[in-house]
Amino acid sequence: MKVAVVDPGSGNLASVLRALRRAASDSGLEAEFTVETEAEAVARADRIVMPGQGAFAACRRGLDAMPGMVEAVCEAVDRRAVPFLGICVGMQLMAEHGLEHGVHPGLGWIAGDIAPMDPRDAAGAPLPLPQMGWNALDFRPGAHPLLEGIAPGDHAYFVHSYALSGGRPEEILATAEYGRPVVAIVGRDNRVGTQFHVEKSQFTGLRMLANFLAWRP
Image (cartoon, rainbow, N blue to C red; front, side, top):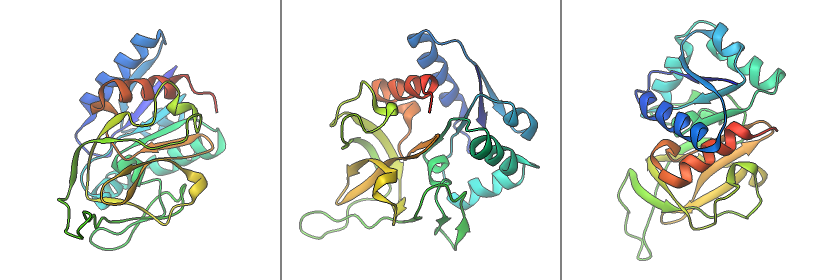
């Protein structure tokens, strides 16, 4: 299995690669993981992972700066049904638009826009942004193969100030509570995305990565 980790210039690739290799080793899966900036290599992959951190617009510019990369990813995912995992801003790029410092196009795979969060406590006071730290996941058991072996209430590690708004209920696989429900996992067909950092989420993240590598949508 060839797993291409697309590099949009986000800078967190080493930890993603370590987590993927650990997940494959722990689950007895044989896979080759490579960081890719060349569209041709991504077009030949059996799995595509797109990490991202920082601003939506910067990651989109990073994708667009690699000749043919957006087309290669879309061809693989849309036409060949290659399984895709977006992580943090990589998940946000699956949406229709990002609204940070203007309106920027996403890949349009998931309904909704990536909008500023406005979390409030029970008294109406603002909560700190970015949301940074561990938060419990809320989902219906059996909602998706990515969640196999994970229980509602298990924790994942978040760092973000923007979140999906206006998503379709059937594409929202899990949420977390931060003043109000925040979309934590999205999915449709052969593509899934996590707002949190799976590579920093210890058991929960490693199990999700192993599930992704074994997934046959």
